[in-house]
Length: 189
Image (tube, rainbow, N blue to C red; front, side, top):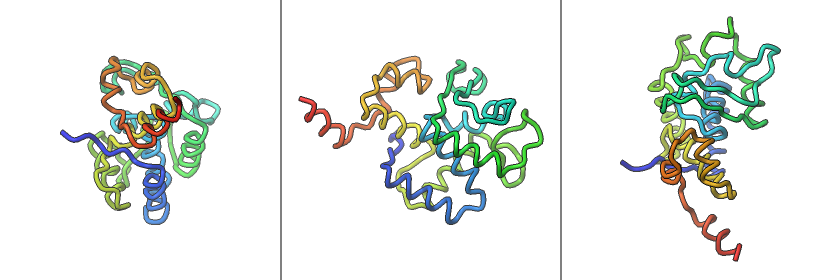
């Protein structure tokens, strides 16, 4: 099976521009997509989020999302670190959506039903396709996240922890070695 495409910054920008210009639920769609790109979350983890996972009691966006074992693929609890730019995106989404209780799911479909991993996957695939990004899948954000951090010199051990992988071999398969990485490596000599 072919691996998901990693996106360049230009391609990610193109998807976000498409969402902003053409999507009815732009804040929701941006937040869902960017959780995969900027936090390395799996699409099923994004779909499983509840308001209380992301919004603290005082209404601020958490800097860490604590996923329970039931929310993760490997059935192991893990912490997802949320960068400031992602917290801004989530704050923007939360302010524009009406959430009756902290226990409800953070992301809902237009029919006010929670996203499943499958419906969230379909949404992300549609966003990439409509933005003209060929080869991108719902896993592209996660792969891009890991590849970008590897390109910045983050150790594979740290990457495995951020990705929630038990094995660094799994993490290594996510890294897409590109020309930029090769140039950087040779320039470091």
